[in-house]
Length: 166
View 1 (cartoon, one colour):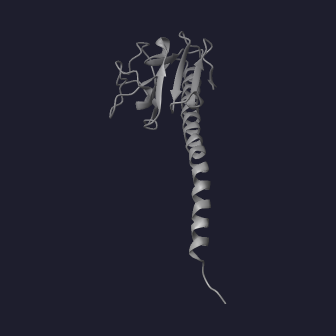
View 2 (tube, rainbow, N blue to C red):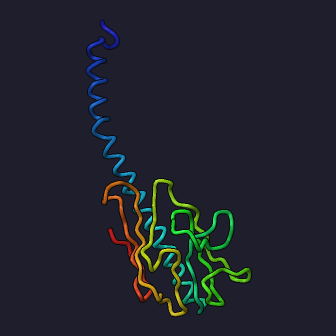
View 3 (cartoon, helix red, strand yellow):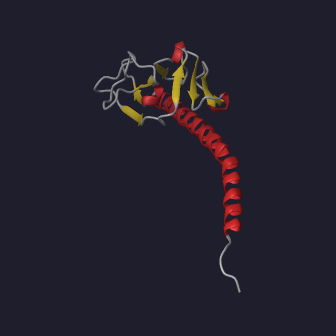
């Protein structure tokens, strides 16, 4: 009675496994990048929905802005939304967070391979008035890869409603 594998059987098994891995790995990479884009877009969408809801509930302006690293202030010169963002109640309507204004939420930085850019209307911040409306219609683009399959857009309408567009 023979036990174990012959060298030829082992080589055939390894060859078949290598072929299957060669087919599966690119598909897996596509899945990861596509999920990264969707997850990031959904995080942004939920943050904008929270800000709009808080503006209506508090009956005052609420701002979503790019946060300075290691602080609780808006970075007015930055345009890289992937570095993290902050939602705060803007009691004096100046678009900048003062010490007495409440921070509602701070979002940690997004995945390193992800870029988030806004068009000129929402390049640095988005604000919602007491009625939940925004004065600037805009689009934020989430880019998680080299292909257009890995891009998502968050469209913010004048009514303040946000939606994800593939």
